[in-house]
Image (tube, one colour):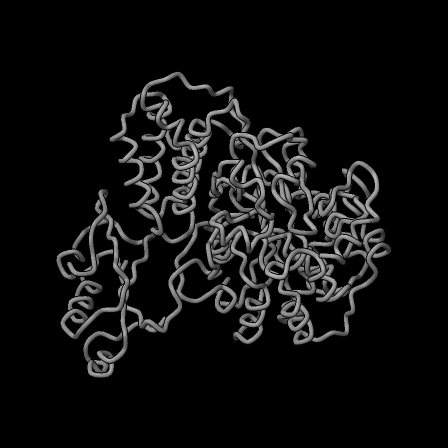
Length: 445
Length: 101
């Protein structure tokens, strides 16, 4: 920690906070470079700022560096990247590298921000991963209708082509704008068969993926980290973050904060309370926090106030940071009403393949909506619990289980609100705090 | 995935390996035939979809019933795997599969 404190001493200006950086902060890593720019950083500026990547290294050397860095995937799975790469490198067939840039989490902005302002960081990292497994092709997987991400990427890929940079070829693949389409087995299925639906497979994609080829699928932020650790080494990478989760971490703020969608880089495991008071100006704990996105976990804000923002610690505490969204629920909101909206939307995002998801999620959404409207009794609350129990762990992907985590943590965190709604008391809710892409896209249209 | 060959392929060998039943939720249509064939491992949820207890099968009779359950499923949703096989899950084999970009 002392090295980190020293590193943070040179922090200057209002945009900096201990252990927290914004785009352009001098203590930033992924977000370092031109400040608060709306423009993507050009290839020339990117190379001038960071220097070249050593192209003489072998795949074995790259995999060793990545293994020593301890980098884990930043899409939520927190799977060691080196293990995927080792598996891909020793599996037969020409490997494929896929950057999962779909960022289907409605409140998350970290991947879009990286691609918008630092596209070459992501492409560099994908190039290193390609070299690490012997791949010649990188596919960036995006949701359709996101020109603010697609344009900078196309531009950056064109820049690299014109600059005659060595490395793999880069191409874009546009997937349906559905939440589940970003699940990594759905990514593989889409690239192989044109259907963005999760599949249950016994063999990891890193061994047998798209068209039977070893396929490395990882999150956008993961590749950006690789671009930096490839230049500055595993020890440098480990000097941020914690021993359990080395490296910095991107977080998106959402909900009742002055700047929803603000992306911040955590350089050290800052306490939740310290973080929120500094970056969102909160004087004390709000009503509750939703951590890890819409398949995440609600927690009473006071209970989480002293928790360190560290992936490994939070996962052990049953509060996984997941995609890195930290959503704030103000005191004048109703957590149950918010959750009902989210569960309804999530039910509509199912790929429709597995019965428990197709039948269970709309049933949960309907029951919860009744509770919010004051039309449910304590028996109906027990029924909600039973529905959650019936759906947990079922299906081919983590979607239904994620919705169960959201629902159950809401029933626990908002127990008081549940009692009030059961008694038919009027709801104290003021509007809604959490964003959805299109409020009409719920399951019960 | 090491799927056990039906019957003929060395039953005696198979019986010594720990084997469990797994389900592909994308295939199960809730016919419910598996419940009749293997009641000790299968139950149905309130919508009729199979819920599988995937702890290792105990004994030769149970294994034989499991094999019949697998063969009887019209949707080919059930499978037998040895316990050495990796747990079924999304292709990424991540600890907690999440739907995130």
